Structure formats: C-alpha cells, structure tokens
Image (tube, rainbow, N blue to C red; front, side):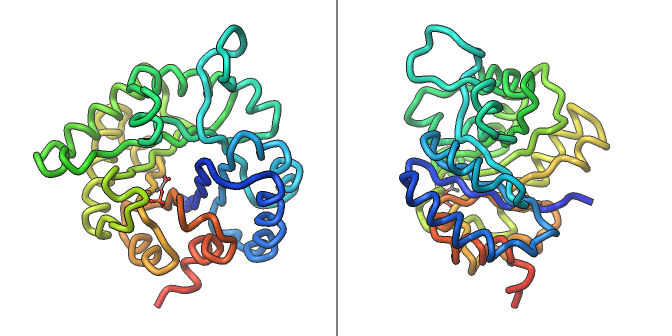
Length: 251
Ligand code: PEP
C-alpha cells in the first residue's frame, strides 16, 4: 500500500517569524494525522527554525532545491550536505519554476538527484507539460523525457514523482481528476518500463497544480494519485490542514 504524501511548497514566502507562527498553529491541527506523510518545504532562510520546531513531530522537512556539489566555489548555492546538516529529510528537485526561471534542465535535475541520494535525502522530482505542449499533443513525450533523462542511471528508491502540469500551477486551473489520473497512469507505466513492476507499484506519484481543500478529495479518490504538492493553498495553516485531512472532509 502506498501511504499518501501531502507536501507544502511555500516557494519564496514567509519570514522566520511567519514560519514560526504557521508551525505553531498547524502542529495541533494535524497531530493525529497518522495515515499520511506530511512534508513542509519552507524557503532556505526558515529551514533551521522549522527544523527545530518540527523535531519530534509527525512532519518532515524539505528544501525547495539543492545544488549538486557538496562544497566549493558555487556562490549562492546550497549543498545536499548542508541540507542534511540543517535537518532536512527531503528535497524538491526540478520544480517548473526552477526550469522556467533558473535554467534547470533534465541534465542538472539528474545531477541534483544523484547528489541528494548520495546524502540520503528523499527526493520529490517534479515533471509536467506546459499549456502549449499539452495543446500540441506532446504531454506524454514531455513526461517520458523528463522522467527518463532526470532519472538516468539512478535507482528510483526514495524518489517520489510530482506530476505538475505547468498550466495548472498557481493559475487556479486544476487538472480534472481524470486528466491527472491519466498522466499518473502513464508515468507509472514509464516507471514500470524502466524499473519493473515492483518499483512502479511502490513509487508514489503526487499531483500538483492549484490543489485546494475543496478539490483535494476528488483528486485523492483516483487510483493513481498518491498525494499532492501544494503551493498557494499551503500558506495558511487552516487551508493546508484541510488538505492534509482530506479523508475527513470527503463529502
Ligand atoms: C507548486 O508550487 O508546486 C504548486 C503546485 O503551486 P499551486 O498549488 O499554487 O498551484
């Protein structure tokens, strides 16, 4: 059985005091949520404080990105060694905003995943098509390329895939549960082709793109959807707790 994962990606939001305020309110809201893995990815500047507050809780800490070298002359970058040192268990790699604004490629994604795994960080690998790629019927080709190039030479254990159609991120346009499920089924088939049956059955595939407390239960009813990566709706404790507790608010 695949345990669901609900992940908050705060992007470039929240100061240290805002992070502390969020965690203080959020922890009691989800302390009895034992049937789901909860992950929060604050900005780098809040990781240390968040790590202190989340220690001994049921919530994992993730970074939103990582560099692929352990140390050296790479101004502005943060290494997997540093993330591990600060208390992260997970890292998001290949988010579409990194690909779109910061020159992330399948090749750098591949190097980052290799480096993260070297330091036992669990990886959430983001893949997804743009609107024009979807319109031109390229969705499955894009997903297959991002997956096979991003994971080239890498064992898939401790990797979660996040399917995030770029046209649904931060736009309020969610993929329908059926659209998301189709993409997830295709992704699972690609994983089966590369890694075999067991790995494909065990790998968790999250959906991301305008997930809210209102649409989460419809998405989570789909057999191929194992959780969510949530941006905007994860910024308020009540909203994110509503998503984490989706099975209790199911209509
Ligand atoms: C994201 O940042 O990964 C994301 C899915 O954002 P949003 O939920 O705001 O669409």
